[in-house]
Length: 362
Ligand code: AMP
Image 1 (cartoon, rainbow, N blue to C red):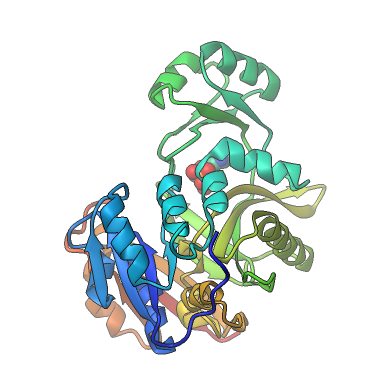
Image 2 (cartoon, rainbow, N blue to C red; image 1 turned 90 degrees about the horizontal axis):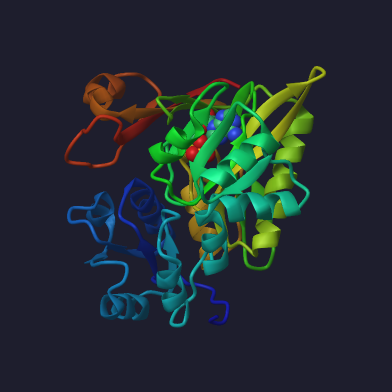
């Protein structure tokens, strides 16, 4: 590991991945006097448009990675499927935040749930599944309904299937490609919420208020803040994030996705997933908080003081998915609506093209 480094204005942040999250990190770096260098394999990556430099190369191209690492002052990433080997290779040359350990744990649903539950934080009951016999044993232990998920590379509901009473377990395993998997008890949640938080290398920590998230077709559709949760849930969620950040030795912004459950009339939360990066459910902070999650991430990885996380009103963030972004003109005409478009050339169904934030009086 390289020595801790405090950036100064004029320095360059290297970002692995060139999608909208990298684009918004680069945009947040600019007013702080920092430059961004994007590293992504795909031609025409949305973040290339707003960065002072970009490298289009594969994540295992060691020559390109070396050149990238020596041209930047810190490296971060916008998605959790950056190969751990890439992060490890880079971290021999330049600080990488968050570090390879946080990346490794959060890439694997089994490792992640094991890590969280060892902290004494509640998750759905879970078991490892490697073959049909293992799945039967896991179902006997956990019961039905249950959710079978690939350990790696799942997102937006991909690589997972619900196994209900009477369903053929072997067919479900086949449906997820018979990849190493985790079986989780189905959580009868009332709503889905998340907490976005930041931690700096010296342990300073700040969490935004809990965000309530509505999904459609497994994709985040709308986030609202404040969430309709009790003060106890607000406090517990921030504490969960603080403990996870601490235990990972995390540097940067991350999100903890949770299920809100109600038992005996009392609200509680169950952790579903950690995202080791800025998160879609934190986009509301761009216009609705004193410091956006993107600026906060830049501050954290630069070794700078974290910004204030206070909310500026009642905030609603709606994703523009596929051709929903075609209504950009009407949104622009709406007083107080903040439009963010990601500069993607093609509006494929299910593709996140932009988002709009609306702020209402508190
Ligand atoms: P994930 O890929 O783990 O974020 O899961 C995608 C979505 O599937 C979540 O946002 C939930 O709506 C649902 N889901 C995942 N795991 C469970 C579970 N154990 N119980 C109930 N619903 C789940």
